[in-house]
Amino acid sequence: MPLFAQSSAPYTWPDGKRVAVSLSFDDARLSNVDVGTPLLDQYGVKATFFVVPDAVKQRLDGWKKAVASGHEIGNHSVAHPCSGNFPWARQKALEHYTLDQMRSELLDANKQVQALLGVKPEVYAYPCGQTFVGRGRDTKSYVPIVADLFRAGRGWLDEGPNDPAFCDMAQLYGMEMDGKDFGQILAVLEKAREAGHWVVLAGHEIGESGNQTTRVAMLKQLCEYANNPANGVWLAPIGTVAAYIQKKTPDSRR
Image (tube, rainbow, N blue to C red; front, side, top):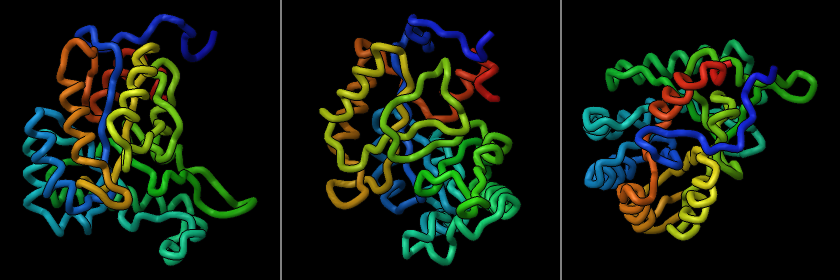
């Protein structure tokens, strides 16, 4: 018997919703709490913020307010390690990490976030979307560590939504929303709704323009669209949606 049942019927979401959507932002950038959380709170929308502890300290009061208002705080490591193929990451290159070092860093990040904000992260986002340590024949995946420590792990620059009846919670697809207008996002949502899929959107800065910036105008339109019951959108943090799927489909945690 297959681990996950094959079905042509759309997945059933709470309250008859037809598509799940999660907004997520990386790095604890200043604009996340200077611009983003006040805007989202106006619409009653809660997002997932994957934070680096040192960045949280730069706006600690703002992040405490974000937690108090119901936004989810996720782990994004301590050093934000990526491939040393990026010159800026050379001193914290994944190629130089071991699995033990990565586990230790993720546990340390959890500890620091909990000390700063009083919450223990249950979800993780892979810096640069990269899931390996080492190089060449010594390369190893640290996905199993993420599966062990967190409810879910999110990727970056992925090309589609997640099928809740099949997806690997430790390797959720995260689709870029930086620089996109609402029309581009709407096309993704409408396609996902046909199958009852889960769209996990990923961004960085929140503002009017700029590199790696999710546009304020798009967020406003998306929140308005999701808040219209006729559109059948369940807009919730990653951990909330993951918990729902895991309760309904226990094998999704394997």
